[in-house]
Amino acid sequence: MSKLKTIPFDPADYLADDVAIATYLSEALAAGDAGHFQEALGTVARARGMGGVAEVSGLGRESLYKALRPGAHPRFDTVQRVLSALGVHL
Image 1 (cartoon, rainbow, N blue to C red):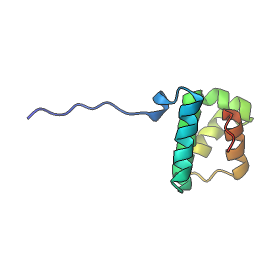
Image 2 (tube, rainbow, N blue to C red):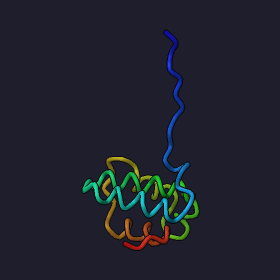
Image 3 (cartoon, helix red, strand yellow):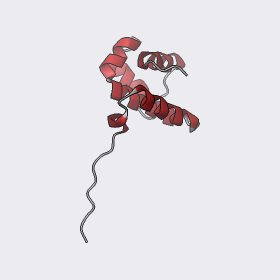
Image 4 (tube, rainbow, N blue to C red):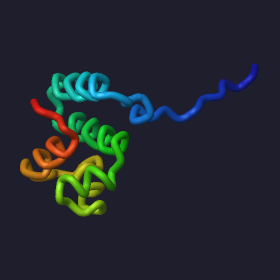
């Protein structure tokens, strides 16, 4: 029996336009799990480029990574700033 080969999947690779990003974040928000939405927000930030998102949001790049890592509890104003930097309006 041959072994099945897999490749890593990164959803950030498929978030190439505003429609895909809006759909992705909407589905994450609809799940009702704050951690899931936070992870999705981090994925979108990586898709758009963390450096650019950090600059536009006024957050340091390292602070942005820390705020969006799994298990973190970012302040609401941090989430708002990231959403605004991404051009997302809920």
